[in-house]
Length: 189
Image 1: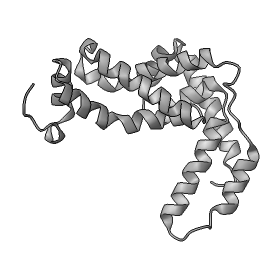
Image 2 (image 1 turned 45 degrees about the vertical axis):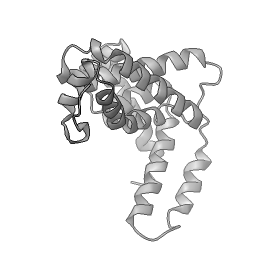
Image 3 (image 1 turned 90 degrees about the vertical axis):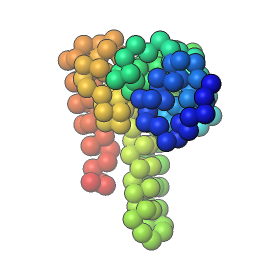
Image 4 (image 1 turned 180 degrees about the vertical axis):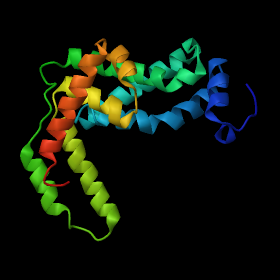
């Protein structure tokens, strides 16, 4: 449509242009959010191929439906809504194989490897893996709540809307998830 360099534009301008049907703006918008979408799915399932497929599905939905976003200030919650619903659809279709292959031995194996390389980068990378394994070991309803709260920064109210539960249920799930994570990670903290 135009010769605008979207890499230099702020996200609000890119969203507006994408809503007007500018394909270059839509491509730039997808490029900016794809890592966050992938990361969110990686905390919801441990199946690498499924994470990639879920990410692609969610990004396609975002690209196709960007024109339906009514308030640009609600872009992040709108994305979270799409990601959450995409995951719920996936979970319904894969109920038989939806159990996360959680093995406490993985935590111990990673703990033993923490001194594998010098430097803080290795330590933080290993801790991230340990935390991710612990999060993936949570029951689905707790995992979704804690990921939306801690990784996406959503309010209890927003999480209750996304998960169709009460705020009290959300608070309870997050509290239980934190307790389970604290118990699993007590050797590391």
